[in-house]
Length: 139
Image (tube, rainbow, N blue to C red; front, side, top):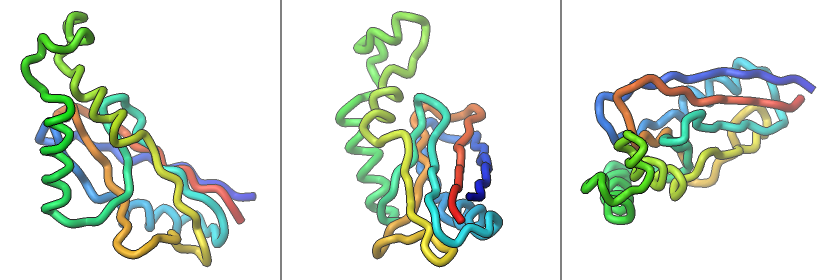
């Protein structure tokens, strides 16, 4: 069995942002030479997410609005976590809703997606450096 590990690094300009990382993951799969296997993609920070959905701008705005309605960023006093001196209690909750990781099958050397599926990095407490792990295993 072969494996490949790659890291993507992000430092978003906005506190909340969604970045399509599908092409980056496809490049890693191609580089790996793996024809049949699995690709794990996970956010390595507790205020960021990796998820799969449609690459449609309106939908991404809907995600941001929906998450803000579930876990509003203000007032910061609403979150016990913020009593520690942090101001990102909402970001932890948003990450929990959107998930930590995805696993995509590799078939014939390509990500085996359904129609419209794309991989996104979701940032909920941006403006600082964060990483995403890509781990590919197979033959």
